[in-house]
Image 1 (cartoon, one colour):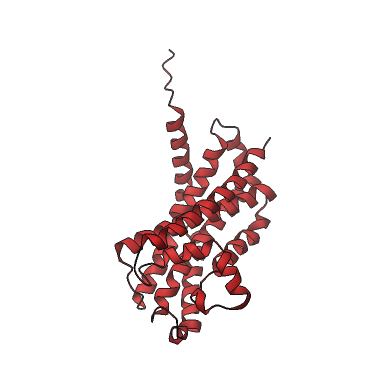
Image 2: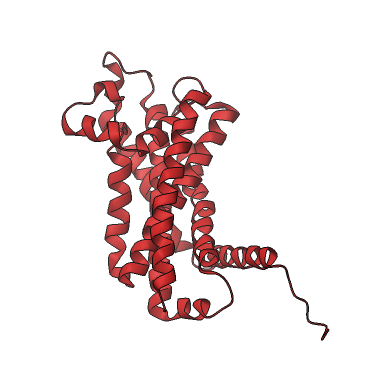
Amino acid sequence: MDGTLVLPAWRSNLATIAALIGRAKNELIRVPGAAIPGVLAPTIFFLGLNGVFGALTHLNGFDTGSYESFIVPISMLQGAGFTGAAAGVNLARDIEAGWLDRLLVSPAPRWVLLAGTVLAASARALIPATLVLAVALLLGASFPGVDGLLIAYLMVAAMAAVAACWGSYLALRFKSQSAAPLMQAGMMALILTTTAYAPLALLSGWLAKIARVNPVTQVVEAARQGFVGAVSWGETWPGLLALAGMLALLGALALREMRRTGV
């Protein structure tokens, strides 16, 4: 024995993931202005939609009298989408700067490098979600209760992971920050073509058809519990299942591109 400390593989992988999350945290601390768009955008979105569509609660069949309560989960999920897309942009920047090449020659498995990016996005997504929630509560939104709040934050963190997988896939595919608009637009379209503006029963035309098959609709309905209606397992598990499916698909695509990079 030469005295060298050899860590078990799982412990080494966890340390690498923690280091990558720490790097993302340091970027946020050193350049806080970079987080402003992702924090302000969902808040402005919340205020704008509430001002324009707030009277929809007077329609027969609308299941709440508070549009603030109805729309706040959408804005929280939108913040998750922006944060996940930003993770993809940052990865593209690291590719252009050659930083990813240094990581790829390290002993760390490719899935560990991807996991660090995805989990960092999940953690950062809680910042805009909290700001939007605070603004909504000040404007009269219903407090969802501890169980509803935990479910909402779980949906936000998982949706940020989905968005980060999507952004990472595009970053590794195109290897350029020029793919940023596609990262953001893809998540925006996925979130807004749900029951974002009104309950499914009140939607019509193409939007109703897309909302019925869009898996994010289940995520929205799960996150909306407590804000609108009671919290139940029957409303929660479809959202968890939808998130698991999207993470499996987009995570597999991103990991495939990660394994192809630098080969």
